[in-house]
Image 1 (cartoon, rainbow, N blue to C red):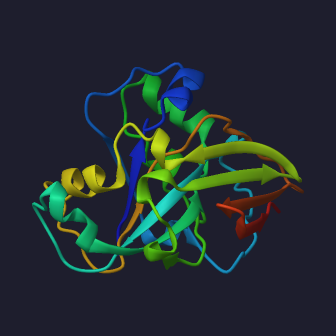
Image 2: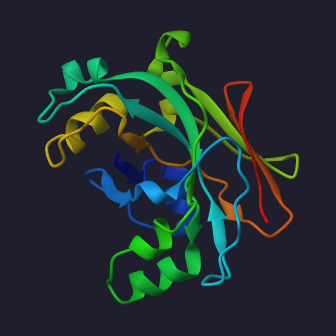
Image 3: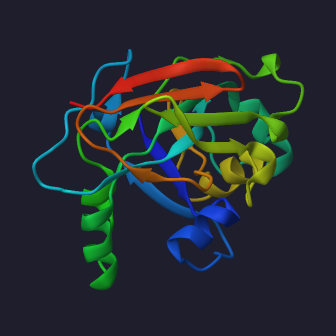
Amino acid sequence: MKIICIGRNYSEHIKELGNEVPDEPVIFLKPDSAVLIRNNPFYYPSFTKEIDYEAELVVCICKLGKNIEEKFAHKYYEEIGVGIDFTARDLQRKAKEKGLPWTLAKGFNGSAPISEFVPKSNFSDINAIGFSLKQNGELKQQGNSSMMLHKIDQIISYVSKFFTLKKGDLIFTGTPAGVGTIKVGDKLEVFLEDQKMIECEIK
């Protein structure tokens, strides 16, 4: 199982981090050991002092495919969920300054909490799915797949040119504006439309 993540896919998030708008999807990976399920708590690691939350829509791939044409991409996923891309921002900043990969900043243990998945048929329009994140009960992020620079089917087609997609692979589709720092004692809640899908305590 691969975790494929899309960076810089919401313009307001790009602005808040001071990044350039990419011409093509920005891709990075997390190992399967990053997955955190069943609302298990996230234990703050000792190697960083600055972890940000990034709420995202997550697509679960349902069958094998490569070099998928965009018009057929909808056949390769049947379910949608939400996730949090925890990012050690201090490690990422240090890596970017040196022109090095972000792997340690993005792929550490527990850095990818995910929800249960629901059928995409629950949604009238895949390109108009709302999601949000609350930190300690306060709304911090609110996004919609209509705001994506690269839509879900475009992402699947693009990624499949480089990686063979397999059943069970996860694609994190990018985060909207409003990312912020977590601390021990926080409670994060992530919603898909109005349904709470993730409740994660920071310990």
